[in-house]
Length: 240
Image (spheres, rainbow, N blue to C red):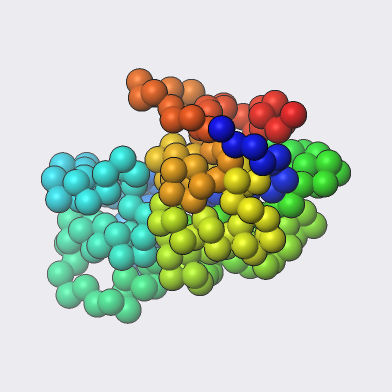
């Protein structure tokens, strides 16, 4: 049982505090990434490529419960598979690096419940931070949106740290950056395995909150210290 009081609240970024391009499908979002990186394709073409890649057993096995590519290497490998399905064969590392960075340059919108929660938590004296598996290119956008609540040094970006969730190092590094014990931290994110469970079981965080915005639920029994919420408005219920 955690005998520490929660004093620090950390968030995932994408699909937790913010959403790239707003309410669009994964195929539309990925097609926009490729278009931004100079690879022209339609959402329909991207959906066809994604459908083929979903059946790749090696990819599914390597991702495990995370279900989506998390590390830079995994994401670039996935982009390479998509490029092959789109008809590209002379695929350079420079091309893949461009696509990886392109995601951070797309239009970004905060969820309506993000700023009200950040404001409330700041007034209540919590230390606030972000842990994001993202490219360095996303930092400017994050700082522009939330710098009034989260100082730049408390924004932990995987490419800058050269470590990704759910590796225990990134959680512990984030707690140290906020100058708190890991058991005083809660991480909120849309990926049950990577954010909520990873923070508790690998980072020794006091709590992990899975933000299930789509209300999908799970048949998995959640570990101790992990809970499911459907909006950010529910976060304060777990901090009382």
